[in-house]
Length: 159
Picture 1: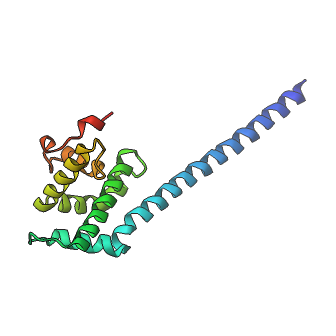
Picture 2: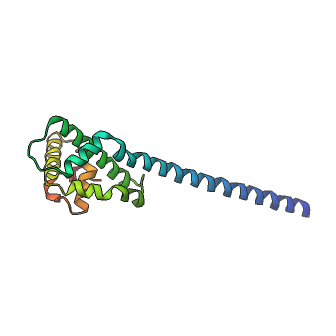
Picture 3: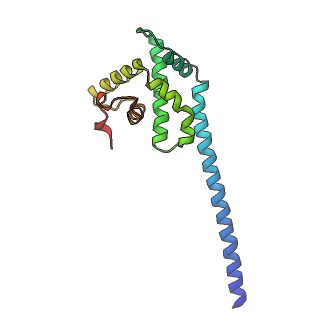
């Protein structure tokens, strides 16, 4: 009887050690995948030419007329920024990872032309009873007092 108990204890310890190692490896893999995903998303800001051009254009915007090609690039930038805000809100990227793009978000959202552009996009979406493509960017801007909540129609989609 004593040998069976000792064998059981040793087997249990080996199994528990194996489970602990497997859990540790699983957590490391999740952290690695999360970091890899955040890196891919955030590096788009540096390497995607349209996004980069649009950011430069927006931060140096001082003219009223914007060409169609520039608007397409700005849409791409705002969609990407909204997606990053979505990833943050759903905890797919953490605050440390988000901090790499945060100042760029503030530069864009503090631009008066962009504020009007977001209001017009939100209004157009509201007219067809759809969520604005920039919903998460707008929500972030409101939460950080860069945008005025009264200028947008977000409540119909808030859960």
